Length: 183
Image 1 (tube, helix red, strand yellow):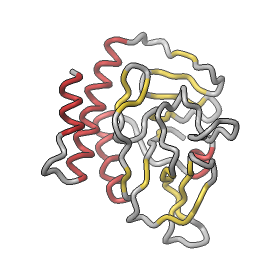
Image 2 (image 1 turned 60 degrees about the vertical axis):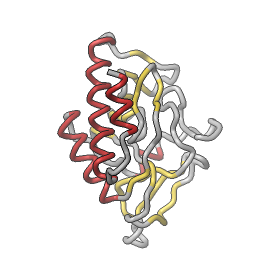
Image 3 (image 1 turned 90 degrees about the vertical axis):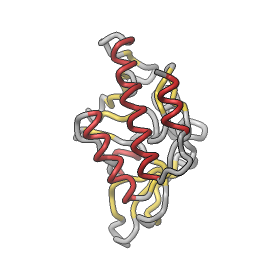
């Protein structure tokens, strides 16, 4: 199973970004099959009282939102996120979300500004996020699905290096992505 995931993640020669996204989500499906067969059905509590972890998903007890523990492009294995987080444009994200919804079920989406800001851990060193719940998160900006209300051509992001939010990125730019579902 690991060889298939490895091959899917590293077969980039001659592929465009959309094909890479498809390969990554295919790898997630293999991972999901592995996780469901080897893990207990009972979710594990983390050291943080705000989340319940169940495999590659973390449920926020404050909001009920279900977060992917890994950034898009990474694989959850051996209780951590491995591989390289991808940076995608808004168009590429829409394609990745369609595939995630089809393959993983549910309604995965980009988080709102408020949702993504709720993951910031101001007491944490960079990246400013709970590293047990969200391992190997990039200390960089992550997309939200929310347009800047002052300049609508820009989209909000949350930077996990600083913990601050910025509404200055254009949809064609490529940033890291963490998907959520629920509320």
